Length: 418
Image 1 (spheres, rainbow, N blue to C red):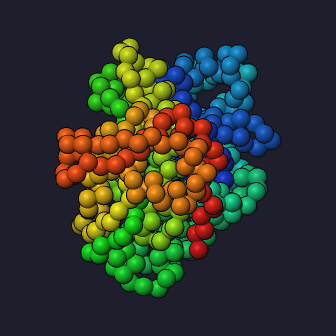
Image 2 (cartoon, one colour; image 1 turned 90 degrees about the vertical axis):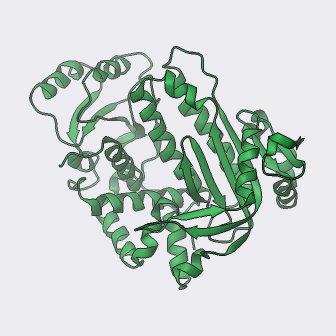
Image 3 (cartoon, rainbow, N blue to C red; image 1 turned 120 degrees about the vertical axis):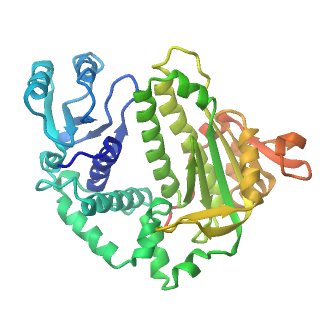
């Protein structure tokens, strides 16, 4: 297998597991260098460490100490790298892990699918395979979210059959639609194509889109954390944060606008109309805050400095304009006052809470008064320098961290992919 980006390979491994239907528990970022933990065949707990070709073997001692501790609940440990280990590395791995009371193995990427009982070896260097894995993982995650995923043992799945099915589905979708995979879920792309309109009409390029809900989040003191955290830990943490926040965007039926540093921008009620958009936006905000607590909490555990972190989320409803700013592939960009106001709301939001504008508050009151009561938003007037670019005082509503975390069940009725 040709050497490539470790981050892309790590994503490919995660996509393989999700496409097969394994429910992943993401491992701590800094304490133990594991990437994925999940329940495998016969109820055994499996942990995977994705090992970069250029990375040293010092991480093995940390993992071995954990596997040999009283806190360990892992039955099988898999180290996976793009190429299988040779010579000294293979001998070292056996010396460190050979005497532990768990099953351990070091595999090349092409061997992982067969080892997990998913059929034959899978060529993890093929761009076609990697794209199909990404789409299959996206589809499986969405189907699980909307309750349409079959309840089967993942090890009864033949991954090649799954990928053939996905590839066939992709082949029926024109190339211009397939290039939208960075921002739109596969279900959204499929639904746009099913409507049998031109892509310009389906995406309403150049038009004013009314009544969307924008969510913009930011991690507090992230620049300080960048300076304090070990580079490898920071890189791994943010790779996990980006991948998982993108999944949350799609799971809740939204479009990913972009990542800007540590900020996540998402658009609800576009390109498909969704009357539940404000409620979905709040559900998404809640899970995004929880993700920040988990990933950043693990990261700060490995730094010397005291860095207060957390997530601030601004939610705003209004109109946007949509343009294609891509060069070779299509890329949607969103403009309008609602984007600026969402940024101002985020800046003024309490840590791990959610600050919403008055329009979103009114919509939530109409959609789900019980939910709004549970969220217990408090009035907050934003004036002057607090909302640069706004002419008048802005009415906003602060949802506290405690209320946002406690308001369950928060997810709106199940999404339907079409």
